[in-house]
Image (tube, rainbow, N blue to C red; front, side):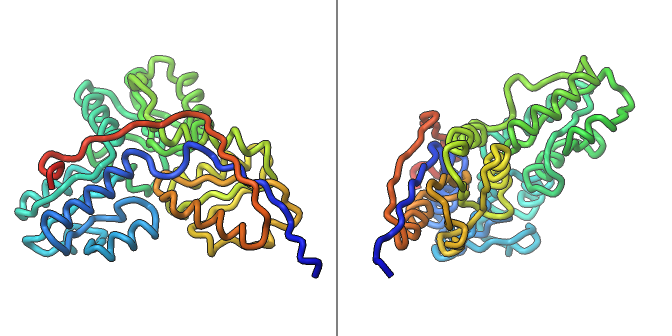
Length: 316
């Protein structure tokens, strides 16, 4: 062995990682533990990231999938993805103290859905079946008031009972480009369809996809730090691949296979909205174990959004 280490350029996407909604949700759990003492129950993963969930478990959070698993007389937090209306109603019925960590941008979609249904509209909801955000949004309105549209083909095949009385909303963590294609079909087929006042895809999702678009053409591989059940992280992989750039989703630096870096001169790195910056640094350090690393941040937009905490926790 010559001892000469290969060089590699790392282009770090910015914005990346935690968004304001994730920051707020994690802080709600931490402050609830400080205020009430452990354990604090959390219905569903607070955000889709194993490192975050495990860190909160170590502080005294217990994660469950259903409210039935929460004992009486302990506080419960609802995840950032939002919950159907029936969940807080059931918690109140049982006398449970609960805190809603739903991202305010998801809550905005919930209120839009209520208003549209109250106005007599049938909602076409663009999203991914089974995602907790979709489940939560459908749970805001009566059964049958919304139809799920996953793809442009779904939009083409749709045969609504009243084509002149439609509105659309979208999941906040979708692919900007895929969603645009679906909405193009809906608007062509149903010209009178009512659009939301502003884009439902959240600023953080759009910004992170935009940052990947900036780095993908400049690198040989994109590494996305995120969970396999994280919608926004999966979309980042897809965005890179659309540029013909191979992309891999990993949860931690230990998941990196150095064989992926054979012959690679430049790597793009980003992180989904639920992944802490610590994991980005961990990955950079791991690559540095075998390569001489040159690191450059590529910033496409400056994010400075902060969401308020629920009343009663601010001074906890």
